[in-house]
Length: 320
Image (cartoon, rainbow, N blue to C red; front, side):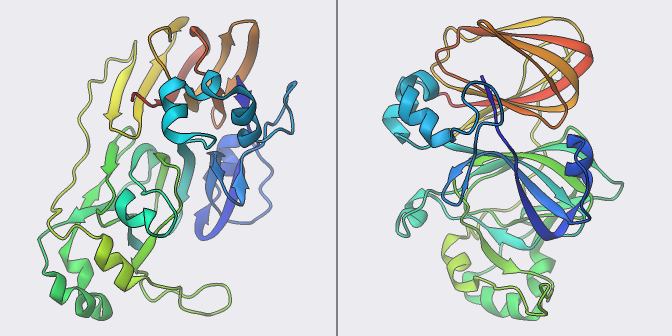
């Protein structure tokens, strides 16, 4: 199993929660995202410690192939890591945006971007946009964006800790100020900004919008997108999302737990959101804490969690 050096993204809307969760020294720069595992060009994760320290995720895959990704994942994705896992801290509102699906993104040499959000924490009154509140005509779209009336058509939802939201490609969406999330998504960084509140960047320039591209990506019939219901058992896996691109589960544990992986033909990503524990896989053992993310290879038959008090984590994998 591997831990990677987080790739920190400093943004005009970020805050201090990522640094606080990870116990980092805050240098006063707003951190909007921490890319926990990524194989995207320019942001390739590197192993933080152990015998493979300094190797990139791409080098690990090239070396271990289906033993790392799983046979069917390796056939499907080759030498790329198919997910991007992040922490997101929104101290200010993010832009209203949309992601393309695979068909549209492939025309530009990328994959589409379907994602899910698990709410680690949310300030009182925090909300997100998830889909349209009412359908709008595509012919009216550009004018509504230019006048700011696009916001009147959006489906805003108040969010709370432990909520889960699905953001399929094509859905208009935005993360609101006060949200702290784990995001699991397809390995893509293609985002089309629809509206950005007339904000200016550090150099005083209005941030670029992608109104025309967004109009091709948007599903104008996608109305409403509430929280995903899941059974909150608290003593075993709570399935959050099952899609063609990823499956995610939430665990809240106080006792030792053995996760059987013998029937799973996939890597597993574990992202801790609360507490501390020891993870044992094969002959490896390591202590991890909130803010850490661990990758376990597909060849593993099981892993064991030994909580120190209590622990919560999101698990992500791909069931092909």
